[in-house]
Image (cartoon, rainbow, N blue to C red; front, side, top):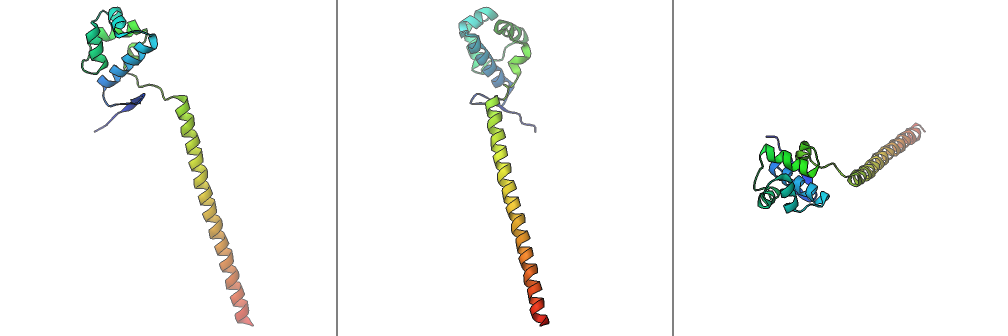
Length: 134
């Protein structure tokens, strides 16, 4: 079974109802709306908006469209996972490059060590063969 989840802030979202709830809440706060003012603009009750934001109710398509219009966002934004913050991408890049550098360092060190052992072994073999020839 395919499992999908994303993080909205610190919340792990595992279904559309949770994603919708968190997106409405985030967009509402971003606009500076209270639940009451969003409810008024979307022609819904404050209690119903609260239940949607808690993930306990799922609105009709008509109400979804009114909520999106009240929040001045596209309908699809209600169900879109949030973009990955640029600062997190930079942290991941730094961690990746650091790990890559460490792994390359280990690989180069191991290759050098193997080469040195090979050279030393060849030198010992040649030295032993010279000693045996005398």
